[in-house]
Image (cartoon, rainbow, N blue to C red; front, side, top):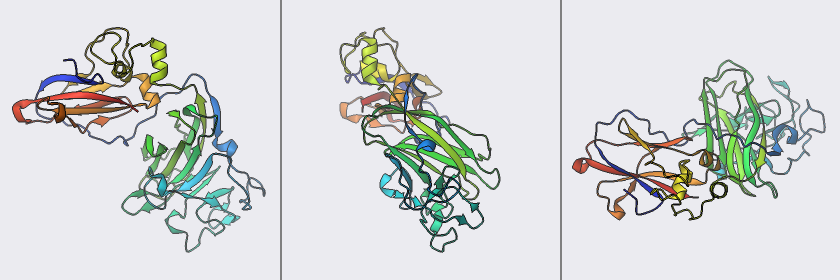
Amino acid sequence: MKPSNPNQFHEPTKPIAPMKPSSLAALGASFLIGALPASADVIADFSADFPSSTLGSGQPFSGTETSASGWQYLWNPNGVVGVSSNYQTLVPNTIATWPGFGGVSPMFTNLGNKAFNSTDQGNFRFGRISLTSIHGSGQVPGTGDYRAIVAYTIQAGEEGHITIANSTYAKLVTTASNGVDIDIYVNDTLRSAFSMNGFNSLTATDLDGSLGNLSVGDTVYITIGDNNDPNNDAGVIDFQLERGPAIGYGPWVTTYGVLEGENGDDDKDGISNLVEYALGLDPKTSNPSPGTFMGNTLTFNKGADVKEAYDVEFKIQTTITLATDSWTNAAATETLDTISFTLPPNEAGGKLFARLLVTKL
């Protein structure tokens, strides 16, 4: 069946079968971001750009240091991460020795020039960002973790396809920990989530991957917090942000020589050009109906380009009547690679129609 809206693809009527177990996890479940471009240039470097102390690398800040252009060091005292209005700036710590920690490298904390054992240190008492240790600490009551947040805002002349590259994260200790949570946002949109439960290894892992096409003023937030246990979750992080040529629907159109626009259908196979891009199909060659239906689950695989560009929105919608105004969004499961929906049992009339809706962002 050819859809009336060219950016909707209808799956034919399916019989209702007993529901099989399925996960309806939100997009924030653990997943990795897309692959890196072939070539890029560095626009930001965490370790190279980190402020240095005028007192020496092993001493605290003197209080006069400033962050390099574009960088911020933050935490979230006002609520969960993913809402930038919850964030607050950390300040250079000028105390030479924290009790129990010995001498420390220059760091940002919420304490400023207060000692580590200050009575007003709050639930972020272990929280810090330095070259040798990054650590979120404590729980936001009923909402999640207090996180240490490293942020970079894209500056003039740095816009393009931005990726995290040459990154490492390693724990400092292996004991008394349930792991670490690392969530990466572009503005307030989640790009990747690493929920490393039981991650006690000192071996570094990487956070490399695509963040999509970013513009001047867009901000990348790397948020790091404990995984259920605020003790001994300190780690060491390093990464670069690299810029490459813009990717996405526009370059894809040029590569394939598409002529008829997003709603057009160059190869006359009943699938619009935008849907062909979203699903990684060839817009110049007739394609069979996309999607698979196995075990009562309808699944669509995303194309390679869209997984790195983040420039379309996917939805699965359902109806029992096919009336124009009867379609409703389904509780689909979306990952970096796929979007899927398991048809429920006992629909009225014993039938259910489903379609994929693709919208250009």
